[in-house]
Length: 186
Length: 186
DNA sequence: ACCTGAACACCGTTCAAGT
DNA sequence: ACCTGAACACCGTTCAAGT
Image (cartoon, protein in one colour):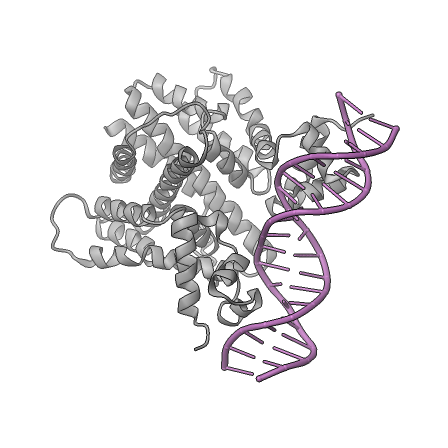
């Protein structure tokens, strides 16, 4: 049986989950698959391309939950933001991976496109929707990336003295709510 | 005359300005300075340390402007945010460099600490201040990083089809204002 | 069609040894 | 004190040649 794109993506996801983005190299990936590095390039354009696929996969189950319109608890945007955060936290350096992918190709991530749709539905103008979605996206990715870096640092060695252990869940929702309140106040 | 920490930092800043973060390697830096790579490690702990110093320098002139309390035009937080953005935009990949530094050591960047101070002065509670500052910081760094990535991509090759050329200045201030309005509505 | 072998052009960091 | 030389353990990517 020959190597598969799926196998490559799965092995990459494994490295990400267990060792983080710093350990995810094409060579390490090839080693894990028992194959020469060059073999990967038959199935995948390059590393960026691979990271893009990983980013999509990290956010994949988010939309499934969100399509469900029956949930009546709270603001839908708030819920989607929380779901995205959960998905990012489920994978080591998830926020960094998605940030990279998002930087190179926004619009490619459905979960984030959905943010827009929901804002649009809430009755904002087109421009408010676009800029509002960008504001929220930057906040979400930045906040979770900080959480994960913090977690990595305190797991590995010392983090620089200040162990300001804020409640991350609360802080996150505080930020989301602030942005949403601000958007509606426009 | 022997090599100096200052020379190293200045040469690094030069590479950053003209070629970007992707070209800023310790070996390239050594080559530019006419010295062996190992020599750098006498003056600088490691690359992360160097990037931290660069981040501080990128944001250095921001505080100078902001200490001036005589300016009466508009919200001081809004002005500071705009000043930070300007400082970041002045250097290639400035937002990425500062994001890296901020991830590894928040509190180390005075300009960003000032954001907190200003929010505190505006009469928010301690928690609102901390979380509000985080929200704003993530937005600022994320928004400018996106601007610069976009600029890099359109300068280098093709950016993926969608040349959504929004007005970045307006979009940025829109985001800042939304967050600020949201904070005050709490 | 799919992969190996081998190369090209790089990295960050350490450290004995020199001056 | 400060730097060189040389090494260690890596990178991403390409591509002729094999099967």
